Image 1 (cartoon, rainbow, N blue to C red):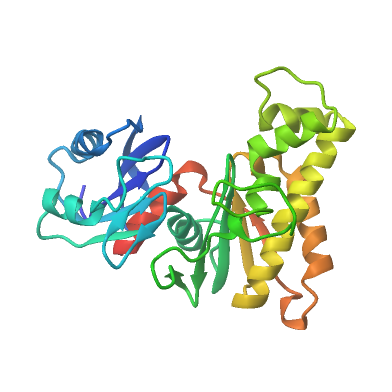
Image 2: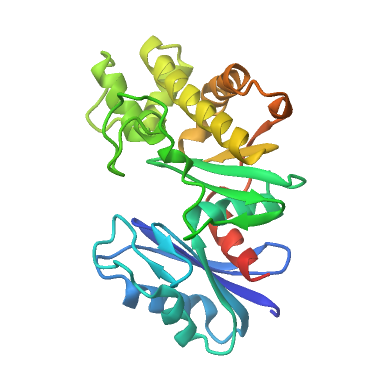
Length: 295
């Protein structure tokens, strides 16, 4: 095995690492739950993946906020890692090779752009609709992180002016409507009777069975996502939106209202051709995109 990049995908609930070849194929991978103090787990994980294989670079996708200028990460769900120097720490483990860092949303978008559903696009947004709603931008064929590396947080575009409080500190964000747990909570409040451990997958099953309240929950979520895409498209002149994540596994339950909202809200002539595509790389998108940072 030659010309491989080590990719690290660091999140609040899991850490994944992989060796990725030049065409975006994951050659070897492993993952562990994220502990309270994660560095030792990161070292052990990457060591088990790399073993004695030389790597030509290291790409890091991290939950944010990130600071790509300083090379630090401050994941919201990992209190012990506030302004943690992740890029420098990884560089110390792998001296002599380039080490690149970006937010996990940017890496998901880049992975899908280079090797997944975003192929052929020049200006795209990638979204992960799951427990939360994350996102990233690829503009003019290149990952775009903005001033600090945090551009593309489409889950925190406001779609309800007087909406529910969000974990980010704002109100009415896309995530408060389209995040899986928020969808379930809204459905319960609307009268949906479900087990205590009901999740977005059960909500989707109920919607597919024709239950009115779950159908409305997915309609609300898709409308919110579509409105956010319309706004991002107007600002960034996008041609493609790629949507993945657990909630997106519901297929047309989510995608149909997304497209309907885009038709209603993306009225400018240059937005008429924007495409909505289902992500292709699944959970590997962040790793593939992290590797692409180095390529």
